[in-house]
Length: 599
Image 1 (spheres, rainbow, N blue to C red):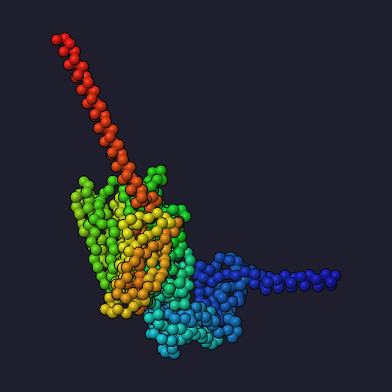
Image 2 (cartoon, rainbow, N blue to C red; image 1 turned 45 degrees about the vertical axis):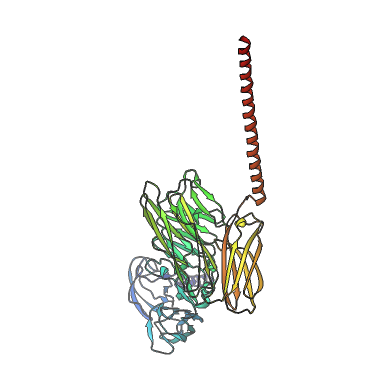
């Protein structure tokens, strides 16, 4: 019997132990405005707990450092008291995530991002200067040079500190992105928040204009490699997000020429489709993601100019006729009925770095209805213009000035692009070639493709008359490195040859260049680049790769055939005429004989 009583007492004791010690540790309640009212501080606190349940009317509770009450609390609202505590001897835990140990390209609004656990107060100073108290992540300003940021935190158990050393060099690289840092920046990335080392492999780059659209790059980009010789990365100049248009100049920003998700905002189409350089974009390059609320989202594999238009009934393409391709760049595209005319379809200029030239284009509306003209600039790094959209009344002409600007830091080369002018289904391209030569070079280069070779079949040869003149006023021979480059109007090279030539006063010769057998039909430019004493002189001429061509021999055969046909026609004509005349004469002689016999 004693054993039974003892076992009963032990069982009761075990149950009480389980209730009062085990159960409280099995659940937790976060203290917040909906569950607790009253004061709270380390040590003893009192207040009201609601929305839970517990045994009895009062109890003591243990408060963990993270801020949770460990117990099954009570139903209703009751007054209570509890004891709080931190881990004995635990000072705050500090870590700095930004700035990092690298080089920053700005001294304004540098990020200070950190984590502080169990801290009652946090403050920092720069280079052991004056302290600044903070309550969370912040930004700070500094100067060029090497700096150390010290971060401090404290609680009742003592102080903790952390530090990071970094450099500010505002001349390292300058990123121009004011178009994506103002009131319409949306989700655009802040490049100045990243160190130079991070900019060399920057992920999740987003450029947004909340009025018009967004570019979200899918891959990491080395942004610093696209800066010019002055360490300028001009995203404002080479990337444009505007009404129903996203343009990225991949020639100026080759590292940004990667896959991305594009969004065009504010569209009013019912069923839009994607246009690439004014033409329907193939599925291999463009993939539609969604269209909702006027926002058209699609993926692209690389960059040029992307717009959208209403999909025609049946999903067909607009009623246009294409006159030639262009190494993927396309030639001039005319509609069946032109809504406007241009006074030129090609512009070629030769300038030195720092020079400016104005070229005028005249647009005429020959119809009887007003039309709206859209002007799209595909070479914005060299061409500035005024209006993007103009209105032309019937019979009206308007001169559009194109300001061709070569910056002082521009590397001598040939830069190709297009100005696309459109209205409705009428679309024209003005092919633009900008030759940049070194200033003061004592060499003149001229290249002229022979007339019979202005149209060439794939795999054929281009024959060019070359002339080089030594302008140095000396008979001393000059060794000149000459490059022959053939490229399309999207700046894709299909042929490149190099040779060295010694010139005394001048040299004239015929250069033969073989085209690839798989060359794409369209418009191309032969660019001749002569390098002497580190300076560049150049010349260029354009031609077209066509699917068929009438050769000189064929022309001769055609002329001979035409002449023979004319001669044969004359022989047949005169023979027939003579036979008819003889027949009339015989009939006349018979009539006269009968009359004589009657007499």
